[in-house]
Amino acid sequence: MAPDETDEQLMRRFQRGEARAFETLMRRHRTPIHSFLCRLLGDPARAEDLLQETFLRVVKGAAGWEPRALVRTWLFTIARNLAADEARRRVFRDTEPLDAARPGEAPRGDRVAGAGRAPDDAAGDALLRPRLEAALAALPAEQREVFLLREHAGLSFPEIAEATGANENTVKSRLRYALLALRDRLEAQGVRPDGALLGARAGGRAS
Image 1 (spheres, rainbow, N blue to C red):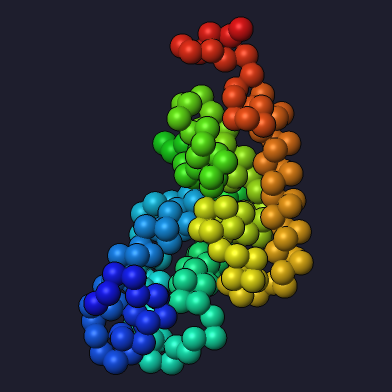
Image 2: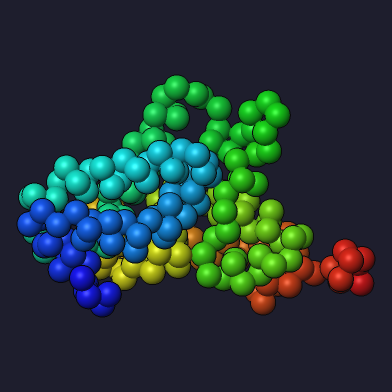
């Protein structure tokens, strides 16, 4: 199996019964999809469950797959839909806000992973991470998923439109609002656009 085979070539091999092709797809996409689910849900354990369900659905649906969209888009569409179903179940079974803390737990926003490339650039500073994570968690769900699909997963606007069922203009609008909201929230907490924390020096002493 050539290491430079495309996802679509691998899927065709899997459709012909080559299990190793599916294993290669899993290795290739497991980490980015798991990270996406973690950041969308704020729950690593549940994200792992949904990751397994994502690939289980790929196995079940492989026979009917056609190359109308990239395999990567298909995978993130499945993961995104599973996360959306999970969010609806949470609302149904628990009326508390999604960012509310349960007894003995930190607020959910403090447990969400970093917010894509820009937040990751600043995440080396332990003082910034809670602010960055909380800002991401505070975004409306539609904006957060578009931000993660674009800035973290690296999907194109047409791919995100395919994954979310929204048109490209709507996707771009959601991303724009997400970026503005993140910037405003972080600036309100003293985080400069370059990721530096205003008033902080090494050792946490104020200037």
